[in-house]
Length: 258
Length: 344
Image 1 (spheres, rainbow over the protein chains, first blue to last red):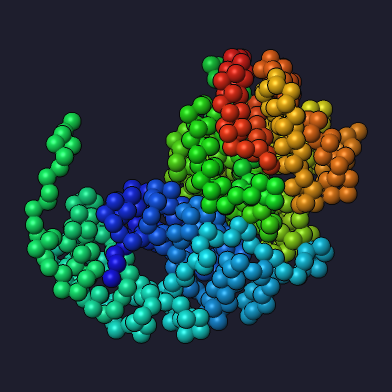
Image 2: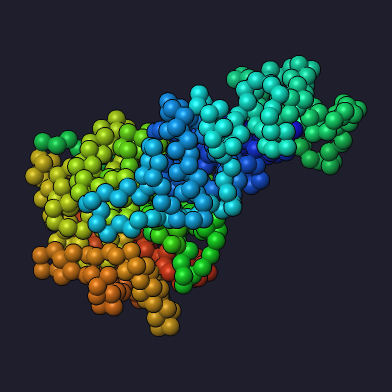
């Protein structure tokens, strides 16, 4: 299992840099405010080079073509590191599934011509006389296909229909053991308790676990704990703790001396 | 009387000691065209690098441009693109020139723009326009016939936000009525680079009449803005290349179906139906020559109330080394001469 970091609002760049420096696979941006999630994700993106940027967007707040365009720009800003965490929000399962279908079609490398229970794209409105029957959202994402994860009250139903993973918020046996299964949990800063906690998540079969840090945590200190004690623990079965518990190697003489 | 926005009351432009002109580069549209193929992610990276260079060189503004569903990836989402520049700079302002307001939910747009303004220390300028392509309205489920009422409703939301400290508004318009409306509402215009000086002069007067008609003192009017095709060089071969890059960049607008309608005695430029003529006429707006000549030509814009000049340098076919060289040269040899005056 790999670990990621849930970012606090307005601290995205700083925390994403730390997540990358500590070798985490990705960061979760935008959970603080669904309206401004893409701003948060852009700030995390330009501060980093390698980490995946999981972007928490809520469905039903904007036309899905607009959302697809924003996500595609984001994916080009971060050169293909975007993952969408789609929150079904207030939508019923059929509407949520339709909106996700539009998003995924719009982000594909094909033109879109969609007629579903919630959306018709293009709309084919009479006044738009020169509009063609299909459109192509551009730019295309930098990656072949932006991964979608689900959360929210309709997530389970959409999962059934679309086969997309649902973000787990509690440990439970997962039903897709060979595929990506994301999770989100809080840690406390207590090394022993947190080590046991993430180990339980790994045992449940989650593949990518985003960590929420305590609000008042010393970032440098807790990230050192995450990368030194938690991440190795879940990266291989039966991790020999002697490697985490050993003394830190000496620095290059003069480094860190002002 | 229509109130001058809170932003402009807070930050009067004409203060003794303040430089008289502000300079930017545009339009960053993030296109990867048939004539200049590239990777889109590279275009976004390049924009961030241009932005940091511009900031180092003392530029004030970077301007973005929006279209939708076009083969070359013409940027369809300006606020994420603006965020990417604002996140890697500290002083440079970023303007949307223009964001197509009728296609947006104004409440959401306002929330996103205010968030970005907060994150960037107030460096976002929100320029809005109407849009003109049926395909773009239809793709977003909006009827083109509703674009004016949607524009007005959107402006009301954004004006209330600006009055409460939100991002300052700009407008894009080329015709008498919309320019007058912008003046009445108190929003500065960023004129297209395709407008010759005389047409800018006509429209600046129209804008000014709207400003005054709304009961505002003439002396309090903000400077307007203009994109300008410009290439500072005395080398005939470089001049020829630059003018050809201007030509190529307007071929893209022919593909988009853009038309510059007639205004008074200023005739229409129809890029779709009279492509060669419209493009050739527009290339003639290009300012080239020595620094002295370029300064002289830009002073003519300053004289009609234009205080923001955005050099239109992101031209189809122009290699990056040429653009960087021109960005440096304009900063070194032209901008200081136009910053030498202070407002009375």
